[in-house]
Length: 160
Image (cartoon, rainbow, N blue to C red; front, side):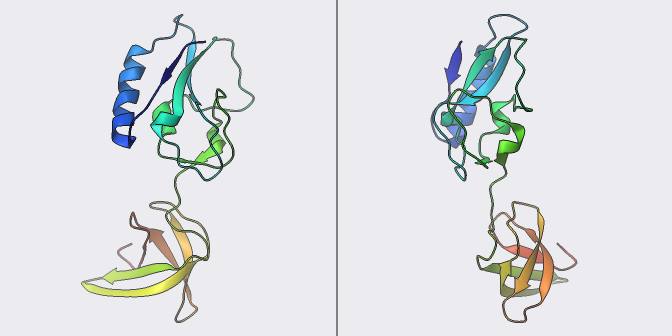
């Protein structure tokens, strides 16, 4: 089966990925090109473009579960379980990277009408960018809802 390997840093890897996709055509018009790992990827690992290659599968290929068919849908995400080299990646085997982890102290930011208040809190669940999660204020013990920001802080208040 044919394959194309991606390498370089994240930006360079994504550029190479796009170029490889443009030049990596299936041997027959009905063949499938699916991204597969080139190395064993363990649960919790962030998937880099250099860890993937395209592999050709016949049109009759039926995966046991729904699989990801676009390398861009995998790169930069986190493996939820071990992914084996040469095996298609199930849709439910990857997730967005966690920016906050349960019970790991992080900063809570309350911002409303020019007022900015910060506090330390303990997330009650894991969270990725833009997710709304519950967090316990370390000073008051009060549980509030907040949105995970790109820097790992949690924004609360009307402006969240």
